[in-house]
Length: 180
Image 1 (cartoon, one colour):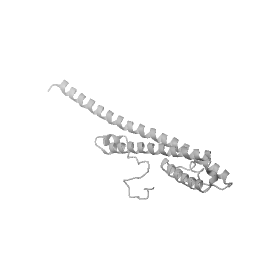
Image 2 (cartoon, helix red, strand yellow):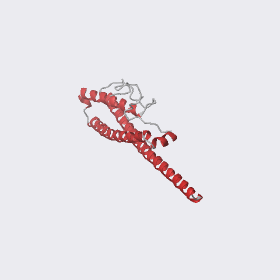
Image 3 (tube, rainbow, N blue to C red):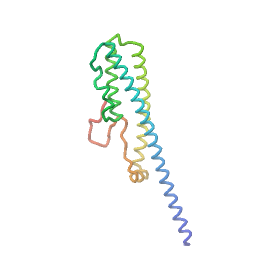
Image 4 (spheres, one colour):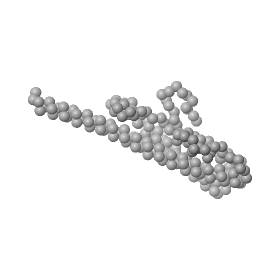
């Protein structure tokens, strides 16, 4: 066989490998961008929900004339190093507590409070949609981290499986991370 044919075959193989690696890399980047984008939306919505819960907490303190904290530790949620997973759970717990208190005191059934509760319910709907989108992309991303030939590129680029938004790790023995 002539040397130029061998060189041509080698170049075609190298080009094909380069093209395949590039396609796989771009597929990973597509999922990483989608995941980071929706993480930002989740964080923004959680911040807005936190702000509205603080407003409700202050209105509740004012309406029922108390200086004690109505919702424990609400203002300290942001100061500690917590993941969005944990903040989401904590804000949900605080919202449920404020909703319970609202139902106990008729003087809290005002337009301002009802508007804030309505806004939080709308935020929760958005959060649920964002979380669903996030988890759908995590499923696909994790499939690529495990599947051949994507896993080879994943290993080279040190991509690891990511947890679902509920922070459940299905690959460990810890059953306590399954929280409701």
